[in-house]
Image (cartoon, rainbow, N blue to C red):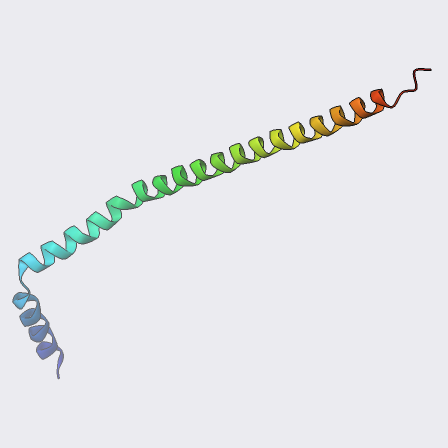
Amino acid sequence: MDPEENQSAAETRSASINEQVTDAVTQSNVKVVAEAPPVALGNVYQTAAHSTGIMFQNAVNAQQQQNILGQAVTNQDVTQVYNIDTE
């Protein structure tokens, strides 16, 4: 094929493409590009919420461990007081 035939074949192909199809593809591409920032921000918020949840879980766990330690110390102190020889 010579260059003139290639150009006429390309013109025939481009002329046969429906404008509605090109509009739909263009709109789809714009929609995907427009959704990127909200999706990224949603991921950031979801990660922050997850991290905050883990932080609260760790805080509650630390409080529970401190309470258990306090009860053990109190129990040991009371045992020592009862074991004092009063004679």
